[in-house]
Length: 161
Image 1 (cartoon, one colour):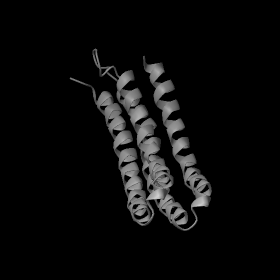
Image 2 (spheres, rainbow, N blue to C red):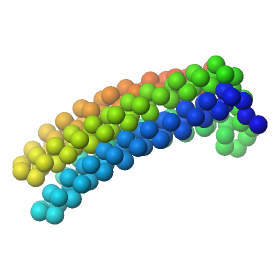
Image 3 (cartoon, helix red, strand yellow):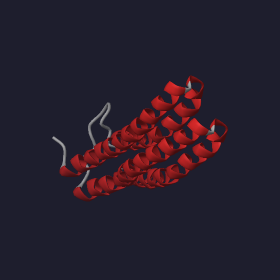
Image 4 (cartoon, helix red, strand yellow):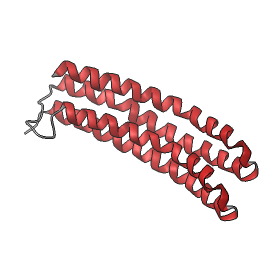
């Protein structure tokens, strides 16, 4: 039997990976559709398109890392599961939200930016590095959400140990 606090912490972990993963899937999917059209016309542009398509995938990785930290801190794998209080569970749940919510929206918008950059590669392949920079700028906000979640979950989680 787990406490409501532990349940809330694990709910936060689930939200971190679900939301960021859904955003990454949508962003990568949008960019993949655009890439397929460009590569169908010119297969030599595959690598440039693939790099742009892969960039929105990082948000899902950030969510996975935060989820892994919560699971590790809660001792879900290999031992008696931590019994968090309600306040501790809410703290961890709140800590998971930045990577999940910001990750979802930034991945979707990064995918849309990647679509535009892939269109640029179709017309001017020599400008692909500029497209990558444009797409990477959206990553800044995903990284900030990840850092906030990391600080709260990892450092805050250490205080519960």
